[in-house]
Length: 124
Image 1: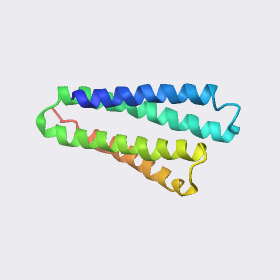
Image 2 (image 1 turned 180 degrees about the vertical axis):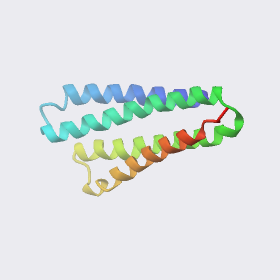
Image 3 (image 1 turned 135 degrees about the horizontal axis):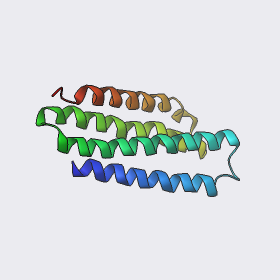
Image 4 (image 1 turned 30 degrees about the vertical axis):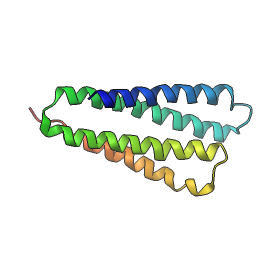
């Protein structure tokens, strides 16, 4: 429970730092399209950081039977942040083009995490 809240909090803080970096340091360097992509990556990272904190809270509110699935959803959210947001950050900052096809895999991880989370809550 605690680890999910910590990971979500750290990734949330990092998204605020990256958002500030993009808004203040990159606005005169990147094109409007690149800056828009960077902002999208920050927003998705932030949203899913909050979802990770929610997972930590849910683990304290649900029975053991649901824990495995809820944790799996969290792992998909972390993978989504790394693959989706990470690949966009890398591409925006001039990283290798082979990172482009990785972005949709991150989006798929996000969707999978949400679906798993939806079916993980006990029907009590």
